[in-house]
Image (cartoon, rainbow, N blue to C red; front, side, top):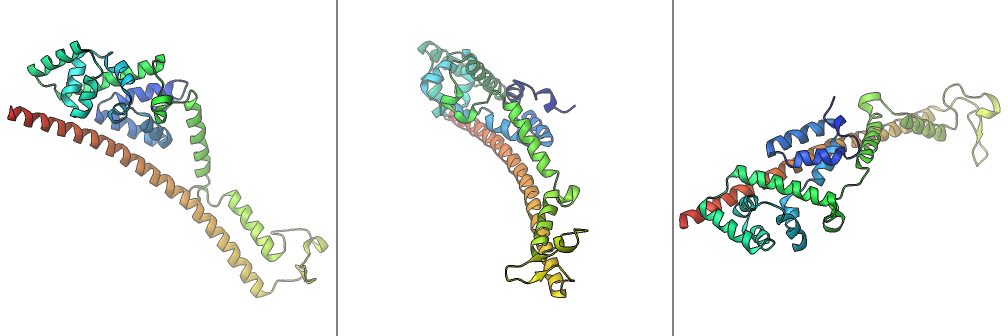
Length: 286
């Protein structure tokens, strides 16, 4: 049984999303790779809906006060002591003077570790999801791209099924699709003016052109045969190209999604290392 089968039910998407966004970076990427192999559409949607620190610090002060005052001082200390100064100031301005003094005292004693920072970010995400579920605020108002539809599981399953059905007609799997053949037959009829296979005989098999000439009542000329064959071949080639384009696009989409996820993780890691370096320089200067 695949990973997704456990979450393809009502509220399953948000449970899987919360599990992934609160996991360590390495484990998070493994989860995303597993989901990508099962269904790229689910992986893409989870990646779009995951909370990020960049998103959080774009919200207004009212929301910041709701979420940061709900966190313990030790976790706030780890956030303030690790995040860049611009974000740390937003946390400080959202809490009470007493909490601010406690944070300053904690930071004077020791700097937060990478593990403490990771745990604090995890708790921050959990608190945000909890308050949003309780109705303290709604993503539709502050971050519409993070809003999750009540029936998102049904939507994703339906969309995945459509893509699967579309890809099942690719030339690599089953050869030209029924639609392709029908289109080719139609083109051939229009060109040759006769039916394909054992069609009706006599008057029903003859067609009159507007200029009054009868076609189909005898064997077509060699040049007519050649023209018909070339047109049918052209139609088949065109349909084959369209199907190949669909497959190529799907492969490229998967590659782009994978690169986007890796890029996001690299940005977070670079920012963390820069903050640690900055703190080390400040410590040496002191």
